[in-house]
Image (tube, rainbow, N blue to C red):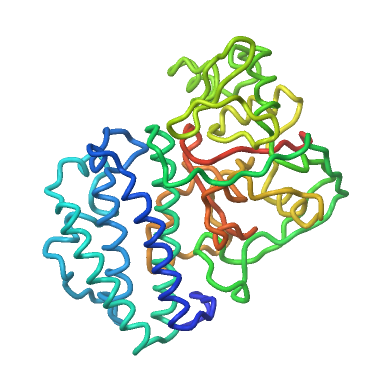
Length: 385
């Protein structure tokens, strides 16, 4: 194992416990699926839960049990698994039409793989296996968040609503010009290929909101006709807004003089202190322009994150930066984690109410297409340059 595959140094029992905990989180969502929920509606932002469950198990088996040191791949314990669950080879819009195993068969597959991984971790743990076990762990935790996004999107009742913290009205933090490192180094524990490697980035003087824009803040923008003011939107943003006829956030509806917000299956009053969630990058840009400001750059966001009054963890936060490779980028063994999405997706930092703490590292780079409204994404604003 060389420095291109850093690990966190977990013991075998710790890795097994973390993998078991992640599967328990997934199981709690599986157990709340409605009767007809295993396939669900076709949509470009969704996966059939039956496919996604099998894919999660397949990914763990593929990297922890089947991948040999020379790169060769042993057969899956589930015949035909690669043709069903390899996301690099199975086109998204075909996943509803596959001859997917029934849920109880996927349960059996999952139990078999989990037992085999635990045995291998306890008997043959080395740096290479530790790397792939961590990769599988974070892959599953990301998919657990995707299941939460599906539950919100489709109005399913979750196991328990995630806890959220109300914030006081945002103040602004000011910073002089300086330099900060983007990216991570081999001393950071497990990192993903798009974080490699640490390099300096200069920034001009700026100010930034101390906390994410709130639901009440965003309601002011909506009530001021922000969705109808062409001058606030970028060309791509206005094209998106016009094509779908968006007039307010996706999970909002008018309620007299105010708004209600759908949180999973329930409509609730707008909460003034909660971070705005489920806005896409176009909506975030338009709000920032309405305030005469901009989305922060990664350098600004990271510099501000060192300030004791910078409050995060409420949302994935859209940045001004496109999702692009750092200098000298090379893909890790899971080559399709980052590389296919450079140039089309946009960067987010932080972490939302259903994000595992391990993924809320400042250096972790999330990324989505700019029109996506289903992620737990919000934003804060910075001074425009």
